[in-house]
Amino acid sequence: MNILVFDTCLDKMYVALAKDNEIIDSKIIENHDNKYHSAFLISTIKNILKTNGLTPQNIDVIGTDIGPGSFTGIRACTTVARIFAQQLNIKAVGVSSLEILSKINPTDKKSIVALDARKNCAYLYNDGEIQGAVQLDKVKNMANSDDCYVITDDKLLPLIGGTSYQAKNFDLGRILAELVYKKLQNPDTKTDWQSLKPLYIQPPPMG
Image 1 (tube, rainbow, N blue to C red):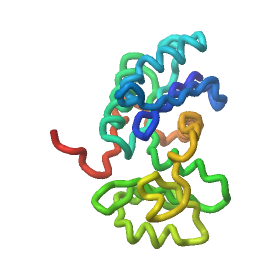
Image 2: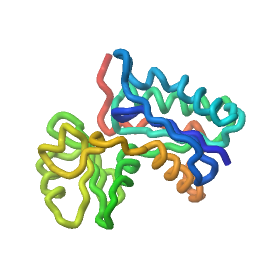
Image 3: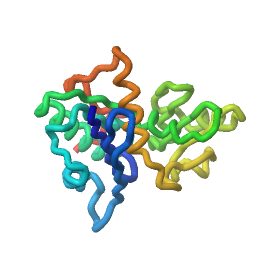
């Protein structure tokens, strides 16, 4: 089973290719030449397939980050994933960026993921569940617990502490591929392209 995954929701673009639960290739693309990284999604997909001797018709499953994150990035990767899955008549699996980031926790402690949601709030993932956009004061109190490992972004790091996922080149594409494969083992996972939708915890900006 060939699995192609991609993520344009966060600060970098991640594209990975897997054979079942074995990672074959993984790319990390940053913004450059004043262009947002999602502009390179299609060309990067073409490149990773060509490099590994595959065509779109060889792909069995598409996996993508569905958010939260950049509204532009969420739209880009979910739209491409839906079109891919629809045109090729293959499975599509969405994974939250919060769940993806929770897996960079190197400890046995539970993961708390808090990403800037503006309006004095953070998108919060706690104890394996997405808890929405939560006031920062409440997030700070949770982050002070010795029983958790806090994962955040550069903006919230000075406020709540923990580890910023932006501080290192974590291979989030690899993590996404592993999570997609794991979800495919669950018979309750929805894999039709119609069910693949952006996760907007707060409404996208108008205009």
